[in-house]
Image (cartoon, rainbow, N blue to C red; front, side):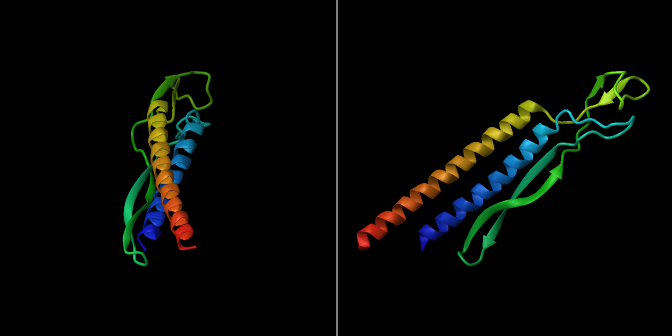
Length: 135
């Protein structure tokens, strides 16, 4: 039934965006996590990669998180000579997390999640009307 497919596709989209939101939340929570010794690496931003997966039972492709990777961009440095992780020049390597980028990712994931939820609710409503019509 096509409505079953719509429900499965929407549920997969919601699960993928939920995972993305968890990663964004982790990035935001650790945006100030530096190392605790000179030369120690600070928190490295995580990224989410999506891919399509064929659901053989329903015969449709759904989205899923293919992998959670690491952003290999350079760490910004901040002059803070009294910090335990400061190098010999007095600079501390800080996480490569940009609050603006994380906020944009969060908003996009939220909108995608909301759109999938709307499809799910509409499909559910159609199923309920079909059941009522059969009574």
